[in-house]
Length: 573
Image (tube, rainbow, N blue to C red; front, side):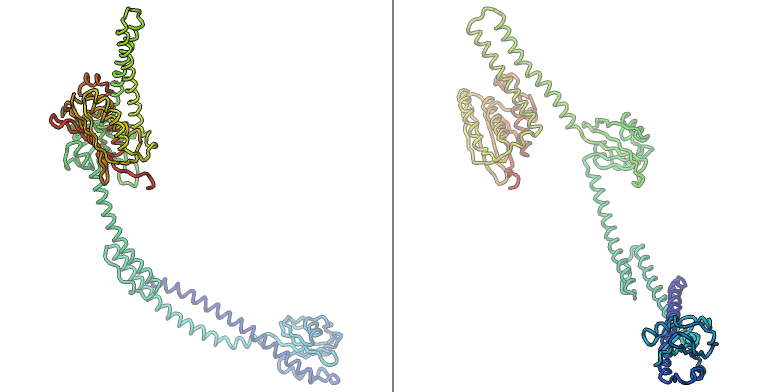
């Protein structure tokens, strides 16, 4: 690595030295050429001042020849009059030569070109005499090259010294880089082993110090990340253990790999279940067959499993993600659907009971109608009795249908968009006034203590709640009994209670009175005109308002229904 770094630094240095030396030589050549041009031009102008047009031009030109300078005299028409180095008698006319043309315009000129006579590159300097003739001096550029060659030893010495300095600097820089790299390597080793990385100040170079600092920061972040992973793992384990749904992971041999607390509780097994056969823990042929089919990639449906008095829906999901580390395994989830299945059963019973409850008044109406239409001799009192029965049964059937529709709307939350600020105390007083007369006919006394309470709810829901509780207290009271109604407002909720002196509700029936069509005494309820849906409506209204309803019943204290409703504010307040 050291050699590679050294070579990587040395090659650019050598290339830079070569380029700089060549550039210096080129610059020196240009400078020397320009100096030669200026020198020739100065000499030509000096020669013009000493040139005697009446004397022999050839002799005057020969005086400059010893300095290595070619002298040519040309008349105004371009005819060569003499030349110090060549036979000028046969030379072409020089009128169109570049240097002559330039001197004709400016009175002086300098040109660098190849001589057609000598076949060499010459520097030409031309000056114009008083009689219009041209005095041209020429010198070969080889003289410039010779001057440059004389400077090459100095250039080479400078390049050699520069190279030695560069080698020393490259060696020192290489050692410094290697030292920093070793420090970074130690930092990475410490990071791998989980140790603290060295301080960033150990690196002499700012860039590498920054990398070292980043490694130290990465070490701290990695430690924090590992701690977060451990924390997340603990959270995942906690969540998995405390899921309400059972979770079971089995492998292709149907051995249990993992089972959470809910699954162990549902199946009645302990932590030793891991590693055991699923068929031993869950001896259900349909579940085991679905596990086999799901392992083979077949689509399977959930299975209802009855275990320890509960109903669990078992779902099967094969793990097919390659990166999860669980490929080929199967996840079983056990969902407690006891309430859902019971609700389904209750819905079926509801429709059955509703059909039965509707069939009874319809049969009574049909029978009374047939008697009226049969043509039998009936007295006026008998006819009136049949008509009264038809009216009563029709009214009872209408109330029942209205209650069924209300229950359906409550279950579908159809009344939620009708919510508004409702004076609950006024609704309670209205219901009390409506039932005071029927209560008096039954010899029942009604007393009410009502505080002002405003609730954000459906007015129809609150009216049904109050009316059903008060009507039941009046209808199922004993002669001479009393109905006590109270409405009070607390800090976070209001409390609405209705108590009556009627026959107490047996303990075994108290948990079922809120079911649809459930009656403690069927004959008494039918005589009172009840539909068996009033308390079910009360329960639905209370649940929809996130409240609570409770029942207390005894021979000495009577029957008391207590409703607690939260004091909710309208949205946006």
